[in-house]
Amino acid sequence: MARVFIGLGSNLSDPVRQLKRAIEHLKLLEKTSVMRCSSFYCSKPQGPQDQPDFVNAVCLIDTLLSPERLLLALQDIEQTQGRVKQRHWGERLIDLDILLFDDRIISWPHLTIPHSEIAHRDFVLVPLSEIAPDTVIPNMGTVTSLIAQLDNSYLYPIQP
Image (cartoon, rainbow, N blue to C red; front, top):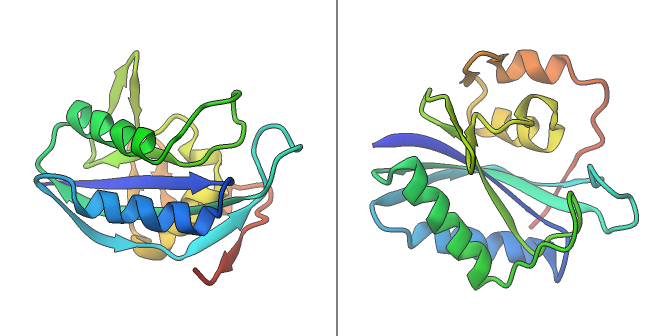
């Protein structure tokens, strides 16, 4: 079984409900178990500021799926929930990202693990530290050390 962290985010159509729905879909994936999920956090958008705030979380799953098969499964969940990408770093009904896949480093045209922006995103690092504070991100350091390097964090937990 591979230990995998999945980032979840939404800022459209009741984002809390969208994240809960995505977690239910994760629980239905073949050869996969959802082990833990962080609290939900509200965050300002990373991209264009003319969009609603995001709700984010991180889930730890154990899976026998390959990275590529898991990516396809996450994309299927996004499509099932009605995701349409409107613009780069723009509003999203649901966004599911493979953040870490064991200690593997993958650099394929369609998949980068660890996620390419993981070290700069408080909305990933803080929820990740909640469920797995001792996690080491390959070639980057510990989650705790990366949080300490963030310039600012504007996250706040919300009650789902």
